[in-house]
Structure formats: structure tokens, C-alpha cells
Image (cartoon, rainbow, N blue to C red):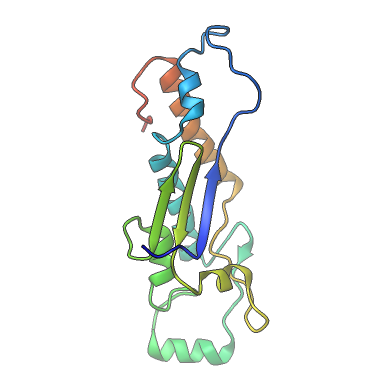
Length: 168
């Protein structure tokens, strides 16, 4: 397996001491140590947000810079109807579809990594001396609130002694 060249991560942790039984939170201690049951749902939220960015040609950082007139003309002739950052769809697919040939998702108890093995992805995110940045990665406050809601449901399921499955 190739090493991903471009990654997005969500990391969670709790600072301080957790004392079982003190506030009726016995079931939460294990949840705080291991977020793996909730990561698939969080990944869905992240991928949906990234897909919206491709559809809207921008994200929380703003609309992506327009293509140069020369490149836009060439692209219209050779790839009609394709949006910015979607020449072949490889980059978009790697960031928005789990199971894509260039997509990687790694889950640890405390972190979720969604990454792409598309070699040119970092150049779009950060730009170069000759190309402006058009960052495909970026979550809005609303996206972050959606992630927080998924995690909240996970904790509430544990606090109510229901199975740790994430609520719909």
C-alpha cells in the first residue's frame, strides 16, 4: 500500500482525570478512550462536506480562484462541463468516496485520518510559485457542529447504556 501524500485528520481527546461513578458516567470512560465506533459516521460528515466544496467550487476558505483564461479555454474543449479541480475526478473521488483507489481512511482510538494518494493534491491545497491555492480541504463551522453532534450522540448512547452504535 502506498503512503498517502495528503491527509485530513480529526483528533479527539479529553484532558484531566475521569473518575468512574462520581457523576454517573461509568459508561463514558471507555468511550472517551476509544472513538473508533463513531469514526465511520464522522468520516461520512467530512466526506459530504468535501463533496459540497467540489460542487460549490470552494469551501470555508472562499470560492476557488478562477482558472486562467488560457487553461479554461483548453479545459472547455477537452473536458467540457468539468468543474474546477475536476479534470478527471481522481482528486475529488479520493477525498469524497471511501474505497476509491486513491483514498485512505485510518482510524485509531483517538484519531481519524482521511487521506489521498493523489500526488498533486498538496499543490492544490497550498499552491505553488506558479499556481494559486485552491484548497479542497476545509470544514465550516456548520460542518464542525455536525461532527460534534455525531460525537454527542455517541456519548449519549453510552450514558444511557444503549449500544455504542451512533444514532442516526
